[in-house]
Length: 282
Image (cartoon, rainbow, N blue to C red; front, side, top):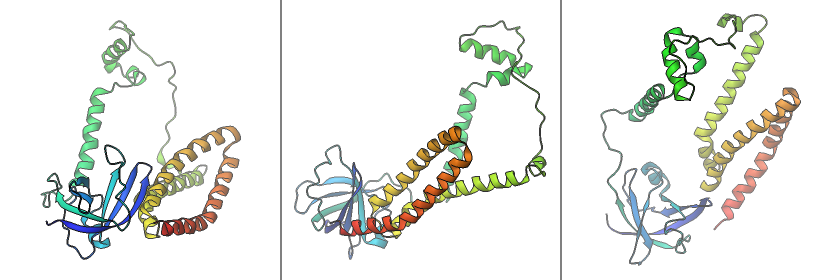
């Protein structure tokens, strides 16, 4: 493909160490496949550097923007030429280590996502030792328990008999007992709570960045949003657990509900300010 001279549309701080360059390719045909890179540099410069393309071909065609995510390290710190409106020379695409256009299995990602955990589980099953308490409850596996104890520094005679002094006979309950008169409401409430919790988590993972970008936020703000979502969930779980242990669940949960309600009330105003800030940025 011939050398393109195109303007740099915008530069965003995706994170303190990452810069997102959006190159305007409107009116130009730039065909590439996922996994390829481009050689770019200031217009007329003798040297151009390779950078991986950070957007899919479909997104580039839709937005007429070529996005490059550049780490500010390894010689890439000097981006004085990367200013909105500056002309860049773009050469490429380059790179052959790409996803094949045609594959026999159209759902290769799902196959890999299923096979890799199975292989990992098999390795863990083979390499990780069984619980000593579990082995003690099964006489047929006492020889395995003797070898395990020897590995951790407790050598015992092979003829030793084992017993778990902490084991107690516990009456097993059926699934039907969960929906009995005494537990029906608690069971349904717990199931509903966990369902809503996981729904919020996976909805956030899948759609939060897209929703923020669609609402007019900059890519850096959208990435910050998903980061805050994850870190906030971790911090909230830790703080909530400590609070429940100290003051009980009733006060803790009601306080959490009030904080969430207040956050929801403040969110629209904060969103408008963030959008205005992003629109005002050069």
